[in-house]
Length: 310
Image 1 (cartoon, rainbow, N blue to C red):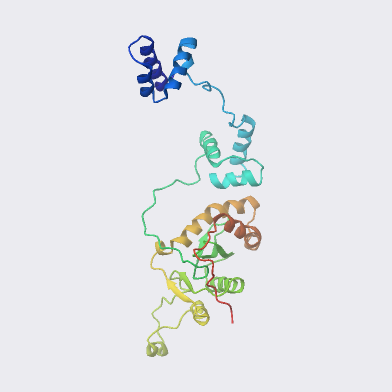
Image 2: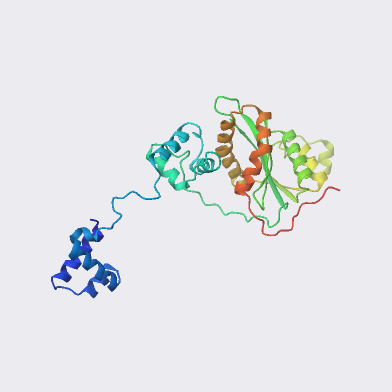
C-alpha cells in the first residue's frame, strides 16, 4: 500500500470504530462523500486490499512490447548512433515506421545506458533581439569550419545564410574554406532565388571587412578604405552591411550552426557521404527543405521586403 492508501485505511478504521464521521473522513481524504462511502464498503467487503488501486502491478496497455523496445535500442546503438533523442524519434516515425513519442525514446535510451548526445547546460542570459517583422529585411550569413564528414575526414567549411524573420535556411553549401568566393556564391543564390535583402548581418571576417592598416593615398584623401570584394558587391546592390561585435550578437546564425553540427553531421553519416559535391547535392535536394519544414517560422507581416533585381 502507498502512504496515501495507508492514511485512508486508518481514517476508515476510525469511522468503523465510531471515532469519526464518514463526512469528516472524506474531507481529510480529499474525496467526495459518495466516494468515501464506496471506499468504506470496499474495506468492509475486501479488507485492506480493497483500498489498493485495481491497476497496481498490471502492465500499462500503452507500454511497448519487449520486441519493439529491443528493436528501438538496436537501431539507436547501430544505425542512428549520432542522433539525439528528438532527431532519432523523427527517423523512427518517418523511415522505420515505428510511431513512438520522444519521451518514450528518451526513457528507453537512458534505461539502457545510452547517454544524451550532449550535456544540457544552463543558458546564459542575453537580451534577445526581436526578429524583423518581414522576410527579406535582414539576412544573417556566416561560415563554419568543422569536421563535417567525421573525425577521420579533413575539415571543410559550411557556408549558410538564414532569414531573420522566418529562421529559414536560404542557402547552404560546403566549400574547402571560408573565403570571398563562398560569400559571393551565397549572395548570388539569395538574389537569384529570393531577391535583394534590405540588410545583411555578418561578422568581421577579412572577406567581409577590411581589417588591415594599409591605406592608399586615394583612401586617405577620401577618409575611408575601399570595401572588400564582397563589401563592394553589397554596396552595388544597395544592401546595408551590419557588423556584429561579438558572437552573441549574431546568436541566431550561431545557434543555427549548433543545430546543423548536431543534425546535419548525423544525416551525412547516415548517407555515408564523404565528398563535398555529394554533400552539396544532399543539402540541395533534401536537407534544406526538410530543415525549413521543421524549424521555419511565420513572419509577423506577410508582405515581403525582398527587392527585385532591376
